[in-house]
Image (tube, rainbow, N blue to C red; front, top):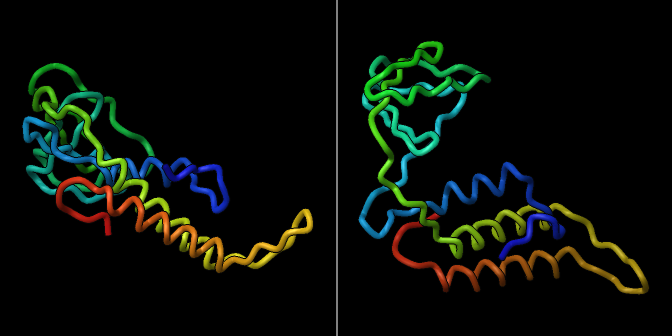
Length: 155
């Protein structure tokens, strides 16, 4: 829908970010919880989902800068993550659902931003203008935006 390997390219991290942005409530109304992130200040009560389980902050603080904690799977068990204490809070009820059209639209928007910074070039007796590439990316944004399901925005 927005090939990561076609110029302008998207990195694996960018593709992962697009999927995270495209999460939506499942058919039962369960919301997608975010994943743990490094070097983030977490407040008491914040919840993350890791490996199908929920973990709730019981002591506020900043997470480790590089090392993700080893998440306990025993009910109510805790793990200290530098300055944050997490408590196991049960199975994550969210069934993975994504608005892939929204992810594709945002991916093409990111590609348009990259194309805007590129230069025109010629290859195999054809000339390629960055404006053409930029226009194509924006046309794809419009195409996938029309297909977005539900409400909300990716930015």
